[in-house]
Amino acid sequence: MELKTKIHAEDGKQEIFITREFDLPVELLFKAYTEAELFEQWMGTKVTKFENKQHGSYRFETFNPQGDVVFSANGTIHEVIDNEKIIRTFQMENTPFPVQIEFLEFEKITDTTSKITIQTIYKSVDYRDQMLKLPFAQGINMAHNRLQEMFKRENR
Image (tube, rainbow, N blue to C red):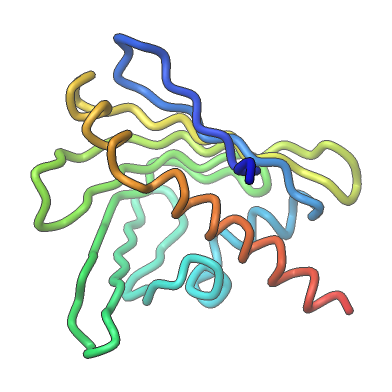
């Protein structure tokens, strides 16, 4: 099955581009990325801090069924323009990966459809290539599928 969320990575570059079109107005897509309650639903993680404003920060944790933290990440928000863009850092805790920077762009296609483009820049090509070996492409695709379905259910 083809993934609806696309990952594009050029050889020799330390960046990736993640793109996805949604059957959602851009305002709902942006809310899904900036409101903790919504973010938790589609990402399947617990938000412990979410300050989506310039100089704000965020942190979230994912737990296994036994209640142990299996993944945590944090970052600093550098810029937020409603329904247009978010610039932030992203740091996976307790991993060898250094902080990365993410540029999230939200685009209105029609009144009921939108697109997100995420450019992620890594410290080196090697770190970027290590990330691409992880199953994150399937993970972000599954999360984006949940995001789309979450709003379909609410609009019934």
